[in-house]
Image (cartoon, rainbow, N blue to C red; front, side):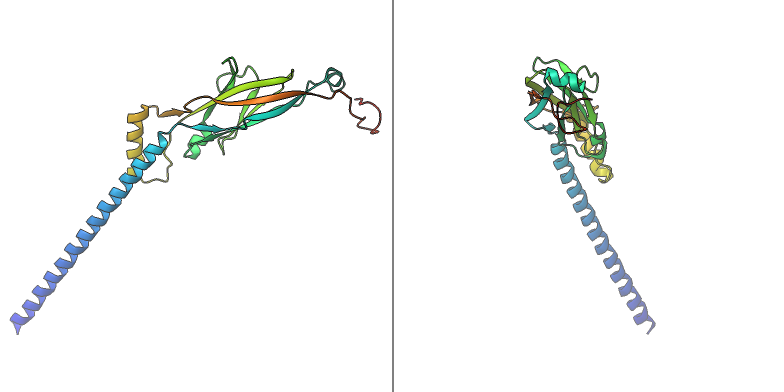
Length: 213
């Protein structure tokens, strides 16, 4: 009787050990599968992160410069022109806050950017990453510009640490320790400026006769 009881305890212990070993092996297999999936994700992200940025910008924008008579009446040359430049290829809020833009005229001279603003200005939207180029033109014609942008790559913080570390290591090897990425080439756009206001508008007070301040 006592021997039978010991034998039952022995069998129960063997069964518990087997269950533990099976659960351990399943957990190890699942862990290896998770690691493999994360490494695959890291490779895919690294390939995406190393792609050059692009800029979505209207190819042509129409602007107006007032005639000489209207300039005297209004005391200004025309209406400000606004061109929105939207970066394509940003991956995190940090990148959207820190992306840098530079604009050049047709002669290759820098006209607006992070370092200097000799003509017009750039207003950044840190939420979307967009930049708005604003300028007031004093002559009609077709004004051609190009734009570039660059950013220091930053892996989104919500990725697992293994993925972030793996992507950062791959990008460091490809881009260098500073992790800068930029547009592959300058993106062109034009502003078509036309003369406006050969005739003075009606008076803003009475609606008749020439405009007066």
